[in-house]
Length: 234
Image 1 (spheres, rainbow, N blue to C red):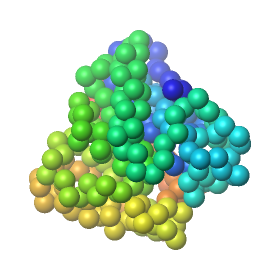
Image 2: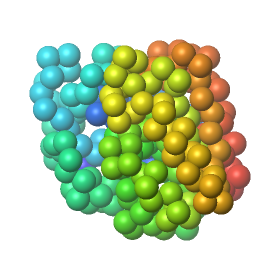
Image 3: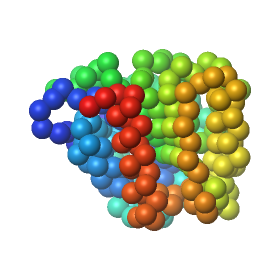
Image 4: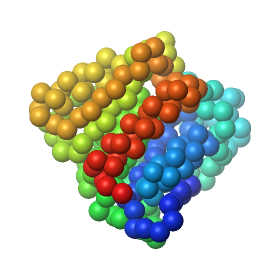
C-alpha cells in the first residue's frame, strides 16, 4: 500500500491517519497531512483502495466517485487493492494495515492515534472503531453513512468531530449516504447516549467544498487541530 508521511522534527508525536473518499488519493490529502504535521502531529495520508477506472482520472489513479473532478491533483497508486461497493470486510483489513504501519513509524506515539476520514473514508473509520477500536479520536469529514452507524450510537466510546456541508447529498456532489440529514441524525443519537461529540455544519457546503473553498478549508483545518490537541495532546 502507498502512503505519504508528514512529520515534525523531534518526537515522539501523536499519529493521525487521513483516509480519502471514493474519488481517490490526491495531493490535497498530502497537503492536509502537512498542515497537521505543522501543528505537531505525525500525519499519514494513505491510498487505501483503488476504484474502477474512470475517464476523469489518469490511468492508474485510485477512485471513481462522482466527486473525482473536485480533486485536482490525483496521485496514481495502481498497486493498491481495488475495493468495490459493500466490501466492508476488506475495508477494515486495508485500513488496519495502514494503522499498524503508521503506529510503527519512528517518532510515533502508538497510544495516541486518530482517524480523519472523508466520505467513504469517514464511514470506514466508524466501522473500524466499532470492530477493532484502540483509536483515541475520530474526525468525520462529509462522511458516508452506508452502514447507518446511527443504529449503533450507544457503542461508540471514541470522541467524534463531525464536519459536514448542509448541501451534501446527491445534488451536492455526494450520495444518498452522505446526505447531511444522516450526519445530523448521527450527532443527535450520540448526544442522546451521552457520547463525546462535536459538530459543525457549513451552510451551503457540498460534499467536496473542503477541496474547492479556501475559507471553509482553513476553518475545518483549525477545528481539526483544536480537536486533536484536546484528545491526543502534542
